[in-house]
Image (cartoon, rainbow, N blue to C red; front, side):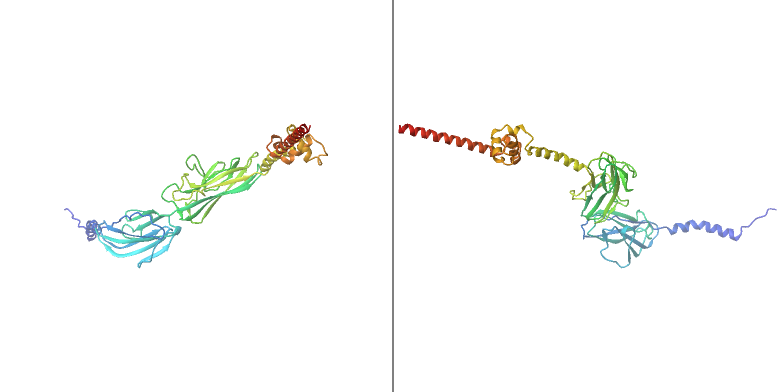
Length: 404
């Protein structure tokens, strides 16, 4: 006789739940919010940007309430507070507004909300984040169909200034020099849209070796950085880790340099540029982009002075009066003048000594070449006197002839 086993009530109930569960899940569905894109703009400082975006529910369930978030970089701000929004400033001076939209967005339906902000006087390289989570919740980090980012550049500029340094050091010694990059505004700088961030190029002075280098300064190759910071390279490009330079901020980088034993006065260079050595388009004033790193080596200027002084000493020996310079003595007129003008100081002597004295008073060799007009005028006066005497003699002879 066969025995029939009847299923228990619990098993029957479990089977019934399993059968209907997938159907219940399908009926629930989920919201899927998608946001439109803000139009691009180039606002002027002081100008207000006023646009709207649309949230559309492409899911299978309604979104009951939406948390809408707006974030602004530090060169932008909210023009006013709006009811239902909570405002705060978060990391990196980013301003945030969390707004609760008390609405139900059915599948296929849309809701529109404004996005308003103003450009501050220091606005330049800015960004705006806006949107919500996929189901209307507070958005997380990162971007997607429901939360987006708009990058914009204000109609403004920033003036980068390179500042050098000057030091004095002995050959073989070590010296620390500072290279500085300053932002004179009016715009602040934070390039998040390309790899060509603002930087300072540093050319190490010839005859020196960089023995200590800042960690933010990388060796620079043919067309860009070549690796992490390390000493001993001829050129470096320095940039802050966050690629941010505020208005009025100075970034100073200290280099320790060792001079070689035969170095003379030497000069390097610092230049405001970018990490790939491309001049930033926002910097309209290139006149202050370059400065020098100058090292004065004691004794080098003195050696140069000795060379120059040697020329002066040679000139001085011409004025001594006893060097027997043959060139002044070759001019008889000059010798006569020397005897007349310096007879007392030279002890009445003539010739070489008196010629040298004339050289001293009239510029040395210039007198013998006729470059100074005084000897020539003296000679001309002597000739004129002689001609006058001859003329008088001739007149007297004529008068005597007539009387006889």
